Length: 305
Image 1 (cartoon, helix red, strand yellow):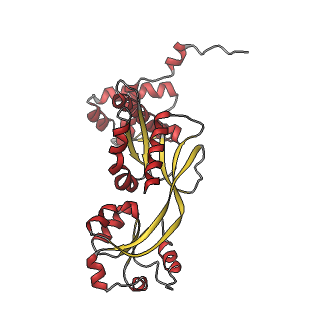
Image 2 (cartoon, rainbow, N blue to C red):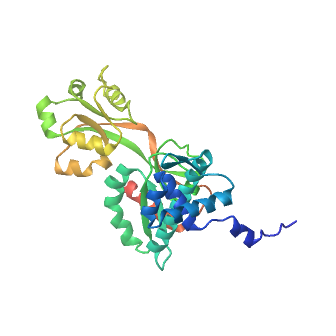
Image 3 (spheres, helix red, strand yellow):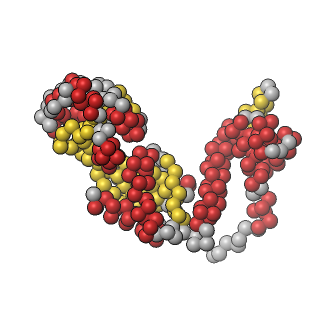
């Protein structure tokens, strides 16, 4: 039995205008009707009326007075956490339409910052030369998220093949080499891998055991491989190595420029491969010809290197 379509007029009754939702999100972010009014170029009374309209539709208070300010109620907190994503998705949809122009070909990619700045973007002109009709926008994401909820077409992920609700294709593994600046090498008299045991080491927080694995593979025993400075981004580890703060284990694809200009030098031909991989991640059971072309291009680039 086919159910009748809901009454459009009834649907509109429970769908606040974008202006009302924007006022609520802004007031929630500032916890102030006055600051929201200043940001939106409205009067405070206009913002207050719009909040009251939204509360009437929802049927509960979204703010409570705290002195001269306002604070979100539990219902308000729950609502704004979802609404912020929805409003951002609307903004991204509009921006995608603007970017795509007449062709309508635009994809949105979530990527790791170091991978994008060090590997992907320097090569991107090659893809653009082949597919000038496809516009790509990028946003940084470090952890898995709901791709359908945030309207991403593709994500570049490092880790295990364990992202629920997606399809994951292997891009490449991660092979790392030991590097240091020429000044650091000269200062510490580094000649062999064994010499690294006694010098300051730089670490990435998400790869805490990689130096230990490197020394074990090289047959060099050490109990101090975990000592040294820790960073949460590869870009900071690279900067630290260039600044002679320590020796670092880094993927070669991230330091192509430094190896080419001599600001970093490979200390040995030995490499170590981490237990994780880079994956191309798309929402489950979706097909997008533009995304498929972009993924094929990236896989082709990896295969040539």
